[in-house]
Amino acid sequence: MTFKELKLSSALVSHLEKNQFPKPTPIQEQAIPSILAGKDVMGIAKTGSGKTLAYVLPLLDRLKNQPSENREIQALVMVPTRELAVQVSEAIILFSKALKNPLITMAVYGGVSINPQMMNMNSVDVLVATPGRLIELIEKNAVKIANTKILVLDEADKMLSMGFREEMNQVFTRLPSKIQTLLFSATLSPKVTEIIQHLTLDPVVINLPVPDEDLSLIKQIGYRVIDEKKGVLLRQLIEEHNMQQVLIFCSSTYQVEHVNDKLNTNGITSKAIHGKKAQGTRQDHLNQFKDPESDVRCLVTTDLLSRGIDIEFLPFVINYELPRSPKDYIHRIGRTGRAENPGTVISLVTPEESHHMRTIQKKTNMKVWMEDLEEWNS
Ligand code: ADP
Ligand code: MG
Image (cartoon, rainbow, N blue to C red; front, side):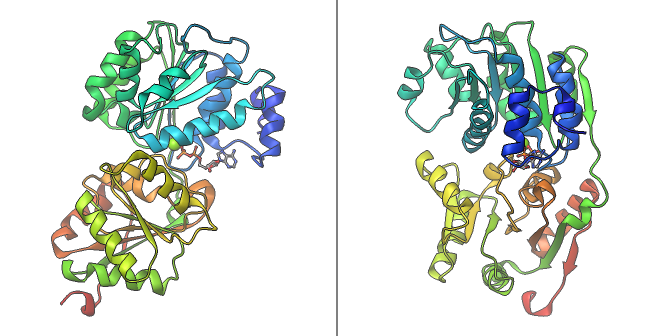
């Protein structure tokens, strides 16, 4: 199957070829025709399988001949984090350029001044937003969503989870009742499925299983280690594997800072991102980490970065501490092994975390190879 056969416009098809996207991924192949046909779509496919373009491409084609005016947007893409808002808007802008009349796209999110966002809102066609800032902008009359034609929830299960419930309800009440709703995620919970039934009209449900060969794409290793030795083991692993780019997850802001400091004082260049950092710094650090030319080898973070962030060819993810839920584990490890590239995930597991590690394996149906070396356990 080719992009052309999916009935995308020739402008987009040639832009895809130019940007080295030879053929659609399975989720793109299945979602694009239904979206082009104006249907609601619920797409579940593994991390790194190209869900962004699965909605971006048909969205552009559907909106390309309808310029917006009077602060009324045409499409609203909602995402859980600021970094993801930036990433998704960049993808939209890249492909929008292929159109004769490129759609105006803007990302809005908190942690930065609202004024420039308000001033630039005139004639925006596609708005990528995190919920809190979107509501602020609506309340200030800077944006109108009452005539939005397409709504996308990327990381849909997260957007519909308890944490965002109240804000999302506020958004939903302001959207028109007739709207094309597109939901994408790698994971889904039964509770969220229920909400989705209210949110969509006779949706096309695409649920792609994770193929078996994927288990070999991401190598998963666990080290049994006592808490006091985690820091030393981490540094040894980084050196032993000669890791030049590794994303390290911790469970708290405090721990992120601590691990980051230790790495830097030991001569391993590292940056930290968490919710208490200034937004400009967060984005700078992420950009530096992504840049293969930069000397930043480690990025230490919380589950803030576990969702959606795409770092090309990222070879290593380390769980310095295990995530709270098996779902978060899936998203964390999904930062590697993207677009059919291989990756390694290493989890540092204390005796207290052992039971949780087993639960994660059971719930995710994944096998983690456990290393149990005397030197790290006493
Ligand atoms: P997901 O949202 O499913 O986790 P992304 O949309 O972030 O995945 O895409 C993961 C990576 O795959 C990105 O770097 C993207 O550019 C790349 N990609 C997307 N579609 C294709 C394609 N058809 N061919 C090759 N690479 C692709
Ligand atoms: Mg995604």
